Amino acid sequence: MTIPSMRFAPHFCKRASPLILVLLVLLCSLAGIAQAQSSAAGQNSLTAQAQSPNQNTQEIKAYSLPRELYAKAVKYSRAQYILYFAGFAWGVIVLLLVLAWRLAPKYRDWAERATKVRFLQAVIFAPILLLTIAVLELPVDIYGHWLSRNYGISIEGWTSWIGDWAKNQGLSFILGIFLVWILYAIIRRSPRHWWLYFWLAALPILFFVIFLSPTVIDPMFNRFEPLQKTDPQLVTALEEVVHRAGMNIPPDRMFLMKASEKTNAVDAYVTGIGSSKRVVVWDTTIQKMTVPETMFVFGHEMGHYVLNHVYKGLVFGALLALVLLYVGFRAVLWTLGRRSSGWGIRSVDDWASLPVLLLWLTILGFFASPIGDSFSRHIEHQADQYGLEVTHGLFPNSKQVAAQAFEILGEVDLADPNPNPFIKVWLFSHPPLGERVEFALTYDPWAEGKEPEFVKNR
Ligand SMILES: [Zn+2]
Image (spheres, rainbow, N blue to C red):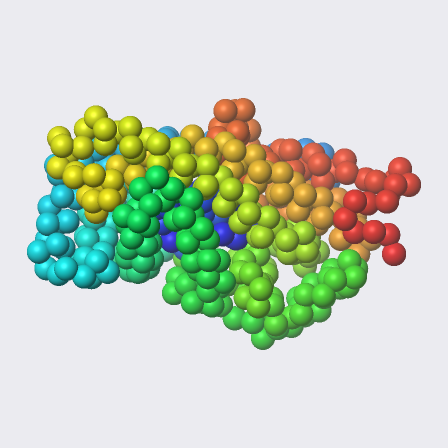
């Protein structure tokens, strides 16, 4: 289940599970989509704690990793890139197999034989089809978790991981039933404009899911506590950051996530909309970073919060999804015009056409990812700038503190120190750490007597 949230740490947009199919593409194209529960563990000797980078007091002049760690980060990143592209290719193959084996027409027949009520047909058809696809894609997910454990990022055991996978499927069935039911009801009424009406219908559902995610969905995967309860001193420090900007983020919107139960990675994020909007700091971040470093990370998240990045990401994602749905609509018609009888599909308004739509959305979503990522890198850069502005003067040497926070992020999460331009454009939701450190060290409007862009001098 991918929930939009604006994070501090770089991550890839995971392959959109077809579930969220349509809602979907959008979700993934949105900037900071993350799967907090996806990371996991490691018995590796190079665990983060063992190397506690906090001790490093040397002045940072540029992003750098110790040689051993550098080689490890490069290896891990390459493996993830291969997994990402191979995972996409396998996702396409899976949908082609589902079509070639005529599984969807078989499931449609079961559903239609069982009941005449369209909604109940969706209740039968959607979960079976989604489960089939998820099971066929399972090897890729298993390899991803194995990789993360092997490199000492994830510490989540397989039993817990399987439990999370099952919960994800449950959520995707619930959402899938409603979306698929609505989609086909609309296709039957408006064969030529369903892409538009479905988009309109999906938007409020999407908003609702995002609204619910911090309180209903996220707690299914991780434990949360009010930060005030676990770390009142940190809340006091963070309130200082908030007041520095003349903003208002009440302490009851600050949460601690017990990420350490599943991962060594550090992170923080902003999620939710309206009354569910909140800042979440992982406990791993608090353990591995000093208070000023955590204040900078919080300042970055505060940038997302104050600059309304969740909303902006949603609007951007929604517009992109509209384009993809329209192109998908044309592509499905074109495909069915040539192949439908061979695949046992009667027409577009047949339940069995769903894999064709999923196939096209998967392909289009993949090729749209550089668009979503460049939007994401832009707002992540803004958040970094906001973090630098809001912590300026709060403690000594705020630029070095920010650079140090990025160093820890890179060392603990094994971020690629130097991605090639293609990888950056295609996969990077955040600017590469080298660029973030360089910006942190050189951004200094105060020295030039200029007014900072977001946080005005007071
Ligand atoms: Zn961010």
